[in-house]
Amino acid sequence: MMNCLRCKGLMVNDIFEDVYDDTGVIYFRGWRCPSCGEIMDPIILRHRLSRALPPIRKTRTRPGPISLE
Image (tube, rainbow, N blue to C red; front, side, top):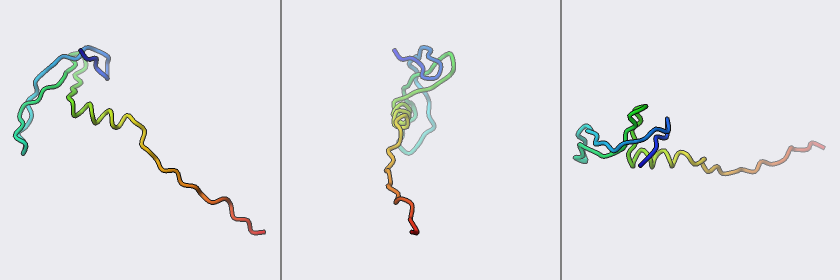
Protein backbone atom coordinates (compact mmCIF):
# COMPACT_ATOMS: atom_id res chain seq x y z
CA MET A 1 0.00 0.00 0.00
CA MET A 2 1.26 3.47 -0.87
CA ASN A 3 0.08 6.95 0.07
CA CYS A 4 -0.06 9.80 -2.44
CA LEU A 5 2.80 12.24 -2.06
CA ARG A 6 0.57 15.12 -3.21
CA CYS A 7 -2.67 14.70 -1.19
CA LYS A 8 -1.76 11.83 1.19
CA GLY A 9 -4.64 9.76 -0.21
CA LEU A 10 -4.48 6.05 -1.00
CA MET A 11 -2.69 5.08 -4.23
CA VAL A 12 -4.07 2.13 -6.23
CA ASN A 13 -2.21 -0.14 -8.65
CA ASP A 14 -3.01 0.59 -12.27
CA ILE A 15 -1.84 -0.30 -15.77
CA PHE A 16 -1.13 2.65 -18.06
CA GLU A 17 -0.98 2.72 -21.83
CA ASP A 18 1.99 4.57 -23.26
CA VAL A 19 2.64 5.67 -26.80
CA TYR A 20 4.74 3.19 -28.70
CA ASP A 21 8.40 4.16 -28.48
CA ASP A 22 11.69 2.71 -29.69
CA THR A 23 11.92 0.36 -26.67
CA GLY A 24 8.71 -1.38 -27.71
CA VAL A 25 7.04 -0.75 -24.35
CA ILE A 26 3.38 0.08 -24.70
CA TYR A 27 2.04 -0.65 -21.21
CA PHE A 28 3.55 0.05 -17.81
CA ARG A 29 2.45 -0.56 -14.25
CA GLY A 30 2.25 2.20 -11.69
CA TRP A 31 0.10 3.77 -9.02
CA ARG A 32 -2.71 6.29 -9.40
CA CYS A 33 -4.43 8.40 -6.76
CA PRO A 34 -8.21 8.38 -7.32
CA SER A 35 -8.54 11.58 -5.26
CA CYS A 36 -6.15 13.98 -7.02
CA GLY A 37 -5.06 12.04 -10.13
CA GLU A 38 -1.34 11.82 -9.23
CA ILE A 39 0.47 9.10 -11.19
CA MET A 40 3.59 7.40 -9.87
CA ASP A 41 5.76 4.67 -11.32
CA PRO A 42 9.26 3.49 -10.33
CA ILE A 43 10.98 5.87 -12.78
CA ILE A 44 9.00 8.93 -11.65
CA LEU A 45 9.67 8.03 -8.01
CA ARG A 46 13.41 7.60 -8.62
CA HIS A 47 13.64 11.00 -10.35
CA ARG A 48 11.70 12.76 -7.62
CA LEU A 49 13.82 11.20 -4.89
CA SER A 50 17.03 12.18 -6.67
CA ARG A 51 15.80 15.80 -6.92
CA ALA A 52 14.68 15.85 -3.27
CA LEU A 53 18.29 15.83 -2.12
CA PRO A 54 19.97 19.22 -2.10
CA PRO A 55 22.56 19.55 -4.84
CA ILE A 56 26.17 19.20 -3.77
CA ARG A 57 27.83 22.56 -4.17
CA LYS A 58 31.53 23.01 -4.21
CA THR A 59 32.54 25.81 -1.93
CA ARG A 60 35.07 28.17 -3.26
CA THR A 61 37.28 30.21 -1.05
CA ARG A 62 37.48 33.83 -1.97
CA PRO A 63 40.55 35.85 -1.17
CA GLY A 64 40.12 38.49 1.49
CA PRO A 65 39.89 42.19 0.71
CA ILE A 66 42.95 43.71 -0.90
CA SER A 67 44.68 46.21 1.33
CA LEU A 68 46.15 49.20 -0.43
CA GLU A 69 48.27 50.30 2.54
